[in-house]
Image (cartoon, one colour):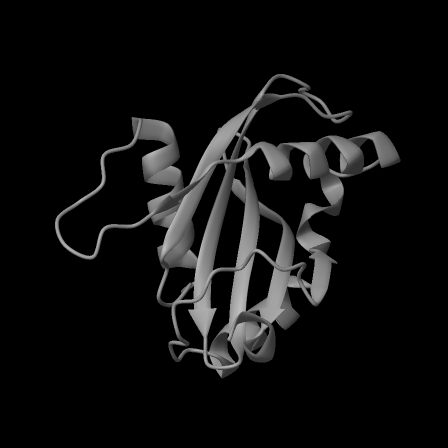
Length: 146
């Protein structure tokens, strides 16, 4: 999925779906094109897949606020706004792992779950310290989550 396709998916899907658990396997997993710069080898891909499984998802409160460490909090907030992710109900953060690209120092790694009229998506983001890069998305169709 390219960034243009991702934007189209967002633009066409800005309505809320029911709040159901997404424990099922996604119907689609896309390695987002803009992230290819950071996922150069199979080892990189495997490392990211392991990190995806390690993330602990946090339910967003329906009232009040949520306190996070500054860098993940600011990064996640900016990503949601910049990419217009609708009806976010869960986030996750972790990181400190290196990839084969330079610099190979630890990157932040975040997850954002948004709800669309045709389903739910989990988007995984790499924080390079300079930019936020969407790496992979898991799409759950509306029929899978109901």
